[in-house]
Every structure is written in C-alpha cells, then in structure tokens.
Image (cartoon, rainbow, N blue to C red; front, top):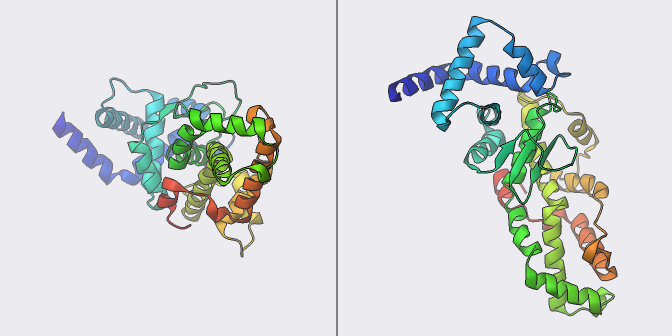
Amino acid sequence: MCARRSELKNQLHVCASSVIFMALFLFFGISKNSYSLTIAEYIQQEKKQKDEHYQKFKDQWFDYLNEEAALPEIDSVAFVRKASEDYLISFGGLREKLGIMSKKNTYGFSFSRNDDEHRKASYHRAHRSIFMDINEIKGNQWLTLFVHEVAHSVDSEMFEALSIFNDKKLIEEIQKITQKKKTLSELSENQLISLEKWLTAGLNLGFLAEYRAWLLTYLIYEEGLADGSLQADEWLENLRRNRPQDVPLNVYIFRSLSPSWIDPTEGFFSSPIVKEALTTLRKKLYNDPNKVKLGQIGELINQF
C-alpha cells in the first residue's frame, strides 16, 4: 500500500496542474459554459462522460483522497472540500496560506443546512461548521464563497468573543447598568469599559466578523482575478469598481459594509444606554477602522 501510495503521489505530482484543473473543472464549473449550472448539476453532467482519460483521472484522484485522508469510504463532501483546498494551495500567495490553514482546521463541512436560513453558504459560530449549498451555488461562485466561509473558521477574534459575550458576570453587570442608568454620562470608567467590552464582543461575532472575512476574501479574490484562477463575482466586482484610489482597502471594506449592518433591538439592546453605547462604539470604529483587531486573519494578511 505504501509503495502504491508513493507511486500515486509521484504521478499526481508530475501531473499536478492537470489534476488540480480537472478537479476544479469537475467540481467548480469554472468554464464559461458552466456559469448557469450549480455544482451538483455540473458534477452530474460530468459523471455521464465516458472518456477514458477522465475515468483514469477520477480513479486516481479518489484513490489518492482515500489513502491520504484515511477515509473508510469516499464521500462527495470530503472530496469537494479537499479539492477546494488543493486548488487554492496550488496557486500560492494568500490562497495557499488559507488552504493550508483550512486543511489543519477541524471545522465541520456539510452540504446540509443546520437552520432555517435560506443562505447559499454560512458559518455556524457556535458549532464551528461550514454549510455550502451544492445545489444552489453557481460554479463561478463556489471558490469565492468557500474562501469566505473558511475565513470565518480562522477568525481568532470571533472565537475569543464567544466566551466574553456569554460571560455570566459580565452579563450581570450589563443588566445592572441597564436597570439603574439611563445615559453614558452616568457611568463610571469601569462600567464604561465593561459595556464597551461586551458590545465589542457582540460586534466581533457579527459585523466585525463579516468585515474581517470579506477583507481576506477580497484580497484573495484580487489574487485569483490576476492569474485567472478565480472568476468574476458581481458583488465583489461592484466593490472593486467603486473603490477610491486614495482610500486604504481595510477602511474602504469596513465603510462599505457598515451601512447595511442593522443593530439588534431586543433584550439589552432595547435599553437606551446600550443603544447609545453601541452607536458611539460603531461611530468610533467607522472613523478609524484600524482600531478593529484582525487577530489571526491579520497575521495571515500581514498588511494592516
């Protein structure tokens, strides 16, 4: 088995370009003729082909995945995740870094929804799992959405925020503030720090998490457009067209996303003092997005 694996790895190494691009062709539908197809439809279409070269490749690729991942049997979920990661890694740059991090990551990956939301792709913060709707995502969108969801999975600031936002002592303190105080001017310095800490954690689970993920996605998207490894996405293209040349990318992405993010209004967020504090915090970050901690994503980007 070891000799066979070594031989197979050598074959795949020699044919790395064709293997990776065939995997991309199979599972991401990058060709211009496949834009209107979903990933599932494209896979089904390719399965009907009887070309011997295609069949030989498919057998090699599945064997390779089975041996390397030590899977009891091949399933399409593992195959698509691995093919996505390998494709990103093959091009170097940020794509390679994120692909390697994805391989090391223990997040769940599924084609099945865990909730009632009607999004094509999502990352579940608490469960640390990625959902991607293989029946809905178009071929030219797959890799960009995959990058975005994987970006969430490496967001250290988001994971740290989970424990802070749900800290019982901190929540009790916030509750006392909402019951006894009406405006920020009435709070002590320690109370202001506690309230901002809790609200920042909430933003790190929501808006700021999306900001960090889209910042990384945008940078990888530009890499991919430059060498043709990623295809144009309408929403990201709109961002690119409207970006002022004199505005730093992180500032531009933050301020582009901010207006569409609606603050919650239930629970503590219905309190006037919490509303005031959240509005004040968001204004502060809007004026200077450099105040937002990027954590592990910042280390990966190494630009801001």
